[in-house]
Each structure stands twice: as C-alpha cells, then as structure tokens.
Length: 112
Length: 117
Image (cartoon, rainbow over all chains, first blue to last red; front, side, top):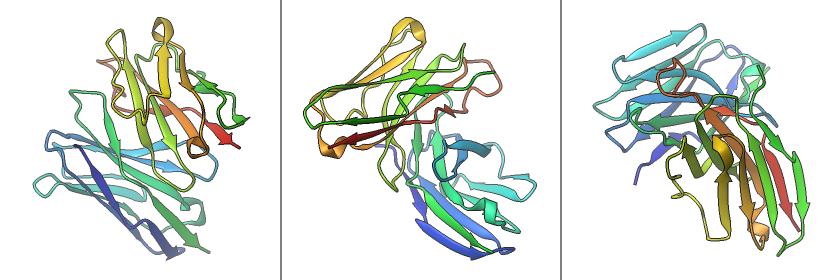
C-alpha cells in the first residue's frame, strides 16, 4: 500500500543553524506534498506545500524541494529559532483522491 | 471563522466501556478525516468521509471502531469495549470542497485525549 517514510525521527540543532528533514513516498500517483507543524499540545497546522509540477518552493525561512523521479521531498529550515521546536510531518496525496498519507514525524529541538 | 472543534477534550474511561468522540468540521467543508496519534507517534489514518459518498474505512484497526457522519457535517467516532491500547489522542480534520484553492489542506481540530484505565 501507500507509504511515506520520514527521517530523521529526532533532530537537534543549535539556534541559527539549518535543519533538513527528508521524506520518500511510494505512490507514483502522489502529486501534492504538504508539511505540517505540530507544537507541543497543539493541533497540526500546514506550514508549506508543494505540487509535483514544481521542484522547489520557498516561504521566508522554510523551503521544500521535490525530486519526483526519485520520489523524495525535503523540508529545509534556515536560521532556526527556538520557536521552530516542534514535530514536523510530511505527507503525500494524490489530488485526484482525498486520502493523505503522513510520515511518522520528526521531532525538532532548537537549542538556544 | 470557527475552526474544527472536537469534544470532549479529555475522556477517561474504564476498560470495556464504550466511548463516543465528536467532531464538528468547518462549515462547508465536504471532507472529514479521523486520525489516531499515540504518545510521541505519527498520525494513523482511521477513516474519511467525502460528501455523501461511502466512507473509506480502510484505517479502522478493528470492528470495535466505527464512525458516522450525519447530514454531511458532524461526525462521531465510536469505540466499543475499549482496551488500554486505545489510549491516544484522536484528531479530526476537515478539508474544503472541490474547486476551492485550499481543497488539499487539512484543518485539524484540537483532538480528544482518550485514556483507558
């Protein structure tokens, strides 16, 4: 069945450093790749997404890259801040359907 | 406008009892999802509803779990004969109708924390 693998499961960086989280997906029909951020005790919220017709998208300090041939996509956070500490989930979806497959999550710690 | 709401926020029950969890999606959203999140774990898909179509129940872990969505709006997730391993946060999410700009985005509720003693 469809599967999304996410690495690493835990990531610790120093404030100001960059953080990279990587995901691979199995369903070649997937064409929409969102990233959700879940702060401690809060609900997941969409922070950025990318569609398969583009290779990269940037929004201030966060960017997402997609390699559709390799079925890889990554989240890049630059100049990390303590408030970036959270669990980040990648996901993959075929926009022709409604089912979204989530990765297992990455717990990011940003040390001040 | 109002976001997705869920009730109760916390539920403590005894093993073997039935529980009902409620989700109120954003008004006008046609898709509704239920997920389970065990402590420190990812989002486990349970079920989704899309309009009046038959729901996708492929993620329900056992026949003790069922869900309904009445009138295309409010949904109830029912767990019968609860077990300790059912303890988790149950998250509901909704998505807008086809043709809108955010049709693929899921808007999550705050979750219901279920503890089975």
